[in-house]
Image (cartoon, rainbow, N blue to C red; front, side, top):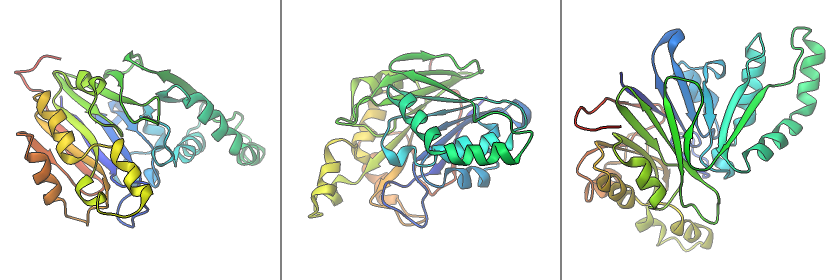
Length: 287
């Protein structure tokens, strides 16, 4: 059975009317048997999930690659919406690097007044939002689903720690990198996988922007060529680009694809929000 990748949000910290914040959905199965794993929760994520036909109560888990604000801007919205749209205690599992528990605790504290209002108003809402936080660094992650999930450290310094995630199911494997430069941890995750979802920035463009804060982005993100080289080293079938800086016009991206294709011989996917990619098992690869 294939794994489905949906690019819920392909934007960045720069607000864009056409692109929601960073968020990727990895799904397997259908209807009541489906598992949905949300990787990062940038601005507008629930709107994009609604467009994809998935609600907050449907999520199996939320996984955060790192604690840069643009990657969890709407996590509070996910927590609250799941809480008020379920009618029995249904904990939301939130997985992330060390520091995630503290962030979630602060989010819940900020939501304190709202939680109190809703519990006072709704007699059947007799508990605060239940969450289970799992902090990870390297190795397998037991979430009790049918998908095998693992993680490894990535390099987004000075944002530290940061992690990438790998999803294995039925012989298909997808890696979601988050923000990182090429590194050994990401290479390890990609060994024997089929597809890599990788954030990218156009360093050739940003180099010519005379703003120090833009220049600062160059040393801790990957270019399309660097993402392509990572995919090529691992002999992947598919590279999926996302988190475009600067923004790609709707329907555009051929020049980004060409840059990645200069070093990667496989399939390259780049698209607008809600772009879907099915990742099928490759009988020639072991997982």
